[in-house]
Image 1 (cartoon, rainbow, N blue to C red):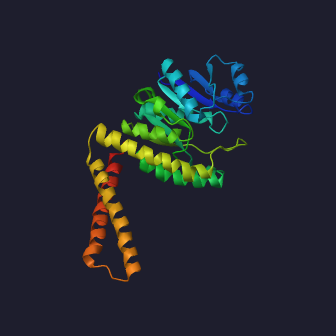
Image 2: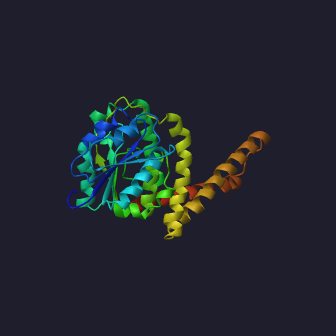
Image 3: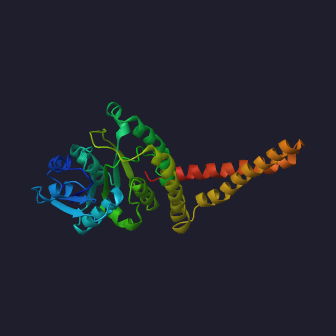
Length: 311
């Protein structure tokens, strides 16, 4: 127990036989349950967890590899059954220091936050150890996730060191959360829909010999597609279905106007080049005016969405 709160740590584990024992050994005494979810590992991860001498450890195993999100959903469901008040995610590869557990838990207990997450970018010295490809991908993902999730004050969205209150967890439809690398981002999207407050907690980065399965190609080509879908899912759920807002009206009106301005403007420019006949001012305005009005509507929608971000 920590300040009368039952704490559970969920560890998604995949092929981490070289690290998992040390991770389990590092977890503090105030943690009530340690839920290890072996995600169909091909090494001795499952056997090492099963033989670990700690009554708090519960070992689950996915029959097929579901990714970090799938493993976490399995762990979340078990934590709910165990009546945990706060659930913390720690990876099994030793890159999340258990000494920072209290830093994640405390804002939820003393300040009423529903969700906390680590932010490696607030530790500039430790940040220098982050591999450059991963650093580049994080900068891209941070901006795209701010836009998609509606949490404009957060940074480092790919940070998997997170903690969540039981009440927030029960609000989520866990079976709809993304199962693989998009898990952390999708959690933010769904938390925003329910207007839960989240907080970044400065936690330094740790990088050992465990390889990263995240590739720049996934960041540049796969994630933007998922983020685009989840952005419109959030807009519909939060600003149309649950409570109609001018934000949706501005978006649904402004976007077609901007697209019309770009497409029609490109067409009349191409036609003028082909025919050599100058385009009249009135025809140009049929492109420019909708574009400017639509851009203003989109800008207003963005400003209102920032204002609506739970703080």
